[in-house]
Length: 93
Image (cartoon, rainbow, N blue to C red; front, top):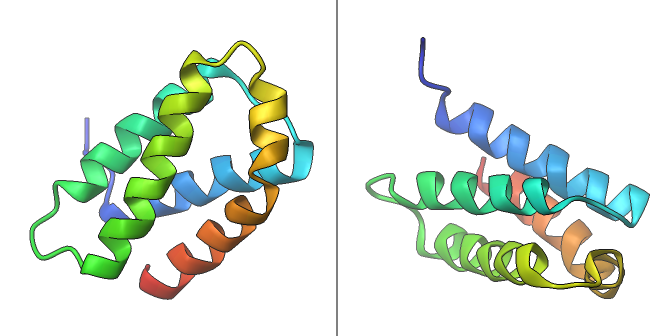
C-alpha cells in the first residue's frame, strides 16, 4: 500500500472541513480522522510555523468535536473558522 502524499492529506483535511461547513454536521469518526490527519501533517519536517498554528487550531476543534455530546452544535459554532481554515490551507498547500 502506498502512503498518501502530504498534498493528499491536505486535500482530505479540506474536504472534511468543507463538509462540516456546508452540512453543519459531522461524525465523531470524522473528528477522529481530522485529528490523525493533522498529527500526521504536523510531523513533517520543516513545517511552516503559520501552517503549524492553523493545524493546531484544527486539532483542538476536532479533539473537542470527538468528545462533545452536541457535535452538530459544535460544528455550527465554528462555521467562520471552518471556512477560514480551508482558505488558510489553500495558501500553504
